Image (tube, rainbow, N blue to C red; front, side, top):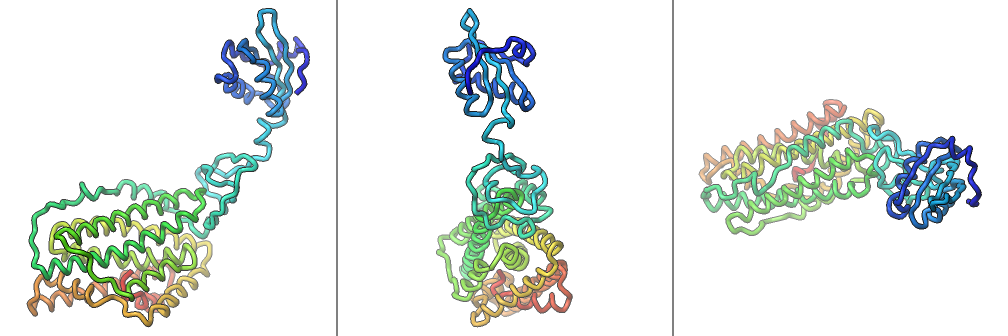
Length: 408
């Protein structure tokens, strides 16, 4: 802006600020900006300073920000200026984007909002981010914030929470059964980690509550992989068998077409079934370490199921027809896995042996009955959750029975 002589009348009427000997390049500009922010559009601010190059720096800044300035120098060398505020707070915020209310997510999040905190003002010209999960109805859960707080409070340290040195001795056949089941749990938890991790990178941070829940799920699953791996190697054993059918079953989780169907197959059906399995291992685990890790993991998995149910209840409340797509997800997965063998015999036999506790015929009979009851409990749990989502009873039963024999 053009430098002119000051009008003493205008100067005396304007609010004033004196930056004394503090240079604008030493922090005085902060004081000027704060004072000018209190001035209405087209209003004036009277500023004074005596630092070296004060007039030069202030004039350059005003020119950059679109503010008019008049300056003069007093006999003692102090510089005075009248700054007339431009038509906007600062030039670069003229076309700024509002990102809604900090406590209320918008129906959709704009790419240009980027990584800004919800409720922040985003400078025009900020880069756009390609977050594919940016529509509230496709990802939201009304209880996400509560589930996140519960998850934070329930985090546990594998080293401190598990008594890895607890004394126990198992028959080699029983220890081998534990190792086989832990091997099976590790590969399933790998899938349960990867699915939310993939969605986490696609989710617009405007929906931070869901983002935080998914981040905790990843942390939970990473911890489960750790403790199951440590338990299988606790007595010096290597991991055991992983089947093609089991891998094929888990791959379908990674191929789900959208966030909601993936959450449905993984959390509502798969992890819901795994809660039954982990509770079974809490009851029939032959040693304290196995029982401890399964008890803690089951608590985490129950929270994942709660989020999955909350999300799908929300989506179905705004899009009731999505129920047909959930049905199709189960039927398509069942069709894709029809040629596979499902749960391998070694895992089922290991569960029977853990429930039996020994290889005597009478014990095996008890163990086999317990493993069969586990499968019935799993199916009943799936049906209950499907009913809660709104499926008719006969359809819920049919779909529950179609769930993969690999449990997850």
